[in-house]
Every structure is written in C-alpha cells, then in structure tokens.
Image (cartoon, one colour):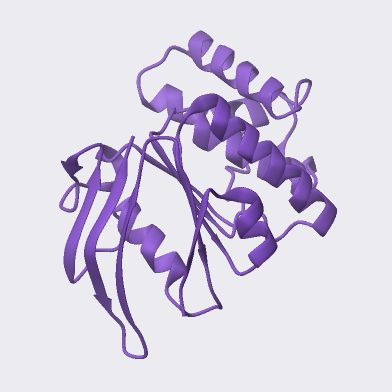
Length: 205
C-alpha cells in the first residue's frame, strides 16, 4: 500500500520535526540521521503510537491519522526483538495470526512458512531464550510479517547485530520485500546500510 506523510509536525523541547514524503506501494525509504534527530518519532507517528501536532498520515489513500495502531495495517520491528519469553519460536510467530482469528492449526502453518522463509526450519519448538541475536531478530521479523502488514517499519532493527550478519540479513530483508510487495520505512544512522536497504534515502538532521 502507498504511504504518505503530509506536512507532519511534531514539537519537542529540543527539536521540531517537520516532514512530508510519499511512497508508492512496495517502495522503500530509509530515514538517515544521527541519534536524536527524530527518526524513531516519525516511525511512531506512522504506526499510531505517537500523535503528530499537525499534519496527516495517509495509507492506501485513507487518512489514518486518528486511527488506533491496530487498525492501520502497519507492522513494526524494533532494535530489541521483544519476543515473548514464555512462548516457543513457533508460538511467537503464530501469535499475531492467532489473535486475528486463525485456528491453532492455521497459525502453525503460517509459522512454518515464515520459519522456512528466514532459514529457521527446525526451530519451531525452541525457547526464544536459547537463540542467538541474529536468530532472535529473524524470529522478530517473521512474527511481524506473519500478519501480512501493508506497511512495515524498521526501527534500527539490525543495529544490535555484528556487521557481517547485518549485511546478510539486510540483503535478506530486501529480497523478502521484493517478494511480498510491502511498503517499508527503515531507520538507520549508517549511510551504507540505508543505501543497501532502500530505494530512496531521506536525510534528517
């Protein structure tokens, strides 16, 4: 789905965010800039976690500025994987589909599909605490995409990983986006990563 930010303004004590951009369906944008410039705030405004002081968020031609996060069709992946520690890998990925009304069998089938997509086949019954950082982030990505969001937001999602894994998982993300056709916005402070992940780069200062 297309994503448009129209004259978004957010006032903070030390910083004012003023931003507009337009993304076509399946396009990707990287927000590049130093810590504290407001990149993550922009993602939270898109997701509905933070209200703008003025301006509009439009997804698929629909003004969603006043809608709650759950009604926007937006998925978000954070730097910390934020998985449910009491659930298995399979149940973490199947949690969203199950909450959306899928049966337990359907949720397991969806989880199996995404486990294979992210090279995690055989991990279904594993406890998330037993996973490496890269494995946990793959599960987090799979959990987000399992509910088929139209727009996916990545808030420094690869920062906690070592450089080699960041490059590899970044390329994997690019492939998944092309394959699935979702619209993506990435937040990063790494210029090379921004160029690797996105069709366009918007620099924030």
